[in-house]
Length: 480
Ligand SMILES: Cc1ncc(COP(=O)(O)O)c(C=O)c1O
Figure 1: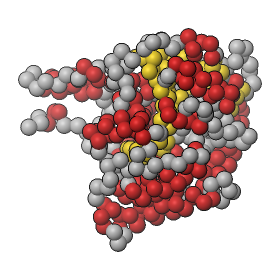
Figure 2: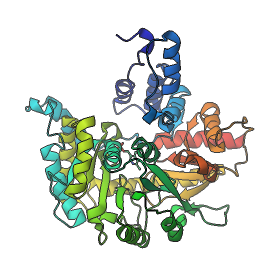
Figure 3: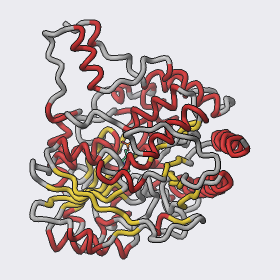
Figure 4: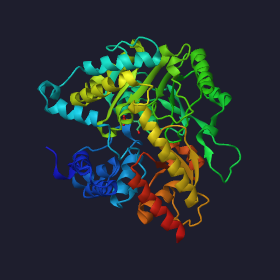
């Protein structure tokens, strides 16, 4: 039986949901505050290590050691900074989620799925993907990839894109295998590779050689293809790509992807292509899917997310698409970790795709409307940051913007710390200015964190009222 001291804190999600599902008349700032205070009422966030230490104090007989596989993986940027934002009731431009409502047709479909005539939609569905969902996704993505996609064998539905990434990495990586990761990278790639026993090998995107005081763009960050190729060894099994990139917002060009594809074909390398922001591309940029390049379909697993597609990040539904023999390995992992994903969520996402499938490419399509709305928010954010003295990097896609804070006039005296300077700065800003962002060093490996120490990441997928609140904080701060 568990001793009381070993009990985990109550789960956070229901409280967050209860606090964020509000009448539409409420302002988003209120909504954020409610979310924040709901989170703040829970015990402080604790790492697995501190929990284990506390537990060890209360009992010497219970073996609470973290498994060897998880040692070193206990720190998590989202746990840390989402917790801090909540604790300080900060305006949250940190974690990447829209605070505006998703399209009404998906929320209505979810209500209907749980409460409608077919009560079986509240029960388990097919393990690898709900039939209605995989069928409509096969239709949509066959058109996108311009090849027939088999709904039953070439699509795997998972709990978020996170789980697709986990299945794709653990389904192939053996101890000793190397995986190329392009920096900056979405943070979970590294612990997933290490968990599988693999070794991540980091290759940086290079910022422009000379720093300017004016705004730059994420396209200016480039991959040195020679340097990339030099990092491949006989042990390299996989490369993980992310376009549009989180945190940078870089949309890889056809030329760049052709060069990467050529190396992968020549060296027989698998590709996991994280394309969760595939619809969030700002004109005139174009999203190129590496799976569609010559020789690439058979070696590529493309990962996508309903959270980003329909602005429902809390639904945590993702999927992997690729040839049947690659998806098979991912299935083996999935059937042993969660077996299936929530049926009502899959049903509602299926309805969403059914509504959008025939208008993809037209103005009425949500996948078109969303980037059009976001590009205005991007431009507003860039203006707001410049006015405050930051140097923004204009993204071509996604919903994040990096900004260099090193030239700020009102820079505080920051405490000395072993942590990267951007982390110290962000923690100060959350506590003192009540504005939450994410330090960019969190998207770099341990040895390379210094490369990002002058940048922080802002999420601009927010209601105008949230952006107004952030603008006011920055303006007041710079007036001081
Ligand atoms: C690049 C990238 N990949 C994967 C994910 C995870 O997506 P999901 O919430 O569907 O698990 C995110 C979420 O922010 C992301 O930014």
